[in-house]
Length: 72
Image: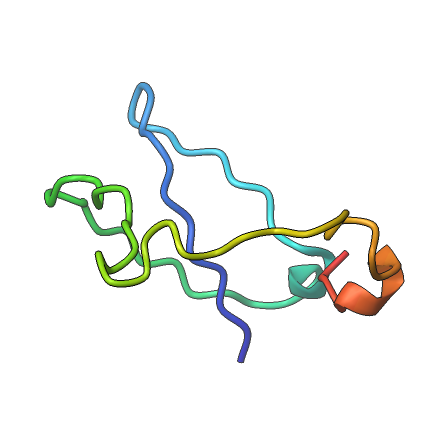
């Protein structure tokens, strides 16, 4: 089973979603729930560790993007 969790805004009683290729030609179950709780607040680090990280050098280019194992 694959799961895709999306939060979308309903406009004129309609929602348009685009799913990953893995869902193509598959039967899906669609469950629609309203979200009444507020949007989660911005996360903050614990006060004991806030401001303790120091970055030395270029961390974004230290490893090739292919090694990140990110979904495409």
